[in-house]
Amino acid sequence: MKTVLVTGTAGFIASRVTRLLLDQGIDVVGVDNLNDAYDIRMKRHRLASLEGREGFRFLEADIENLYELEPLFASTPFDAVFNLAARAGVRYSIEDPHVYLRSNAQGALNLMELMRRHDCGKLVLASTSSLYAGQPMPFREDLPVEKPLSPYAASKKAAEVLSYTYHHLYGLDVSILRYFTVYGPAGRPDMAPFRFIKWIHEGTPITVFGDGSQTRDFTYVDDIARGTVLAGKPMGKDRPGHEVINLGGGKTPVTLLDFISKIEARLGKKAEIVWQPMSPSEMQDTAADITKAKEVLGWEPEIDLDEGLDATVAWYLENLEWAKDVGL
Image 1 (cartoon, rainbow, N blue to C red):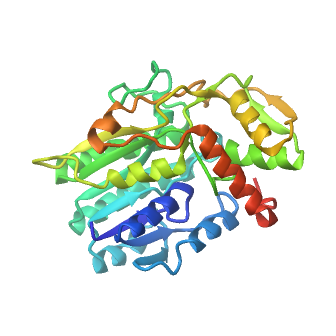
Image 2 (cartoon, rainbow, N blue to C red; image 1 turned 180 degrees about the vertical axis):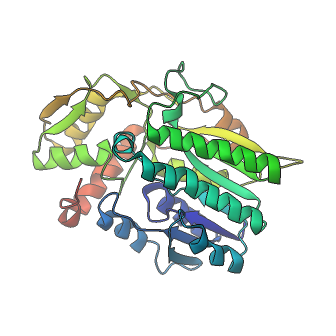
Image 3 (cartoon, helix red, strand yellow; image 1 turned 90 degrees about the vertical axis):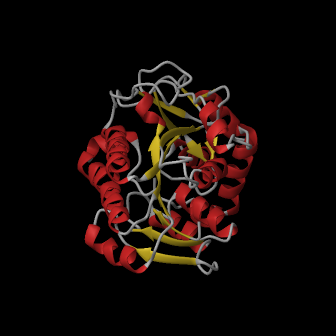
């Protein structure tokens, strides 16, 4: 790869992927609409770490707008597209399903159509472990994922299906990555890790949905970024491929209460918990089978939860002056 497009480049995962690509000498055009789905200060903080890097160019644009992106594809030949732009979050998708379908499905379709028109043959598509609802653990890529519990999961499934259509009709080489509970420094403020750290540090009661026994396969953001970049290589040896690959911790999932305890220990403070009923859109447990990622990408996570939480809490404390005021 010489030049690639990364969408959602001011986002949590995409900013790390962009940095890693630049470190490898790959030119990156980053696209982000800098929407207010969560506090824009977090997005600008991530973007600031990329600005000025050799080989990086940023364009404020929206993947929902086909005509806005057309001139970019016409002027820049891309070797690959990393589509990491998305409206994320299970509960919020119930409140406004329309924006999730526009961004996650229509936006993905726009990119695939432009790739077809401008002869870009490689797509890396971010997807989600939320699709595995109701399936036996650990989740394998060959399990049927036909019963999404939220508009968010449904929108990601739609993008996956569309990518197969473009693979079948036009030979698009596709790597679909199903991410498992990503956490780390400068994480999304609408996700539990950032919220719990902030709330426990300032003494604000934290809200837990369910009884806290639900488990998650937490995966550190730098491991996710590394796997995402590896997925940019062609999947098919003799012809374009279409592969779904889990990127997850791949070890014993951690209960939410244990996760909270680890944060308490690092901050030296106890959490006051407000209990709320668990949403029917939420999964009780997640666990990734990462056998395929090892075989196809040569990837497995390197950062365990304790090391990752050390870095995450340290980042928050180092950036406390402004991070404490980030809206949730």
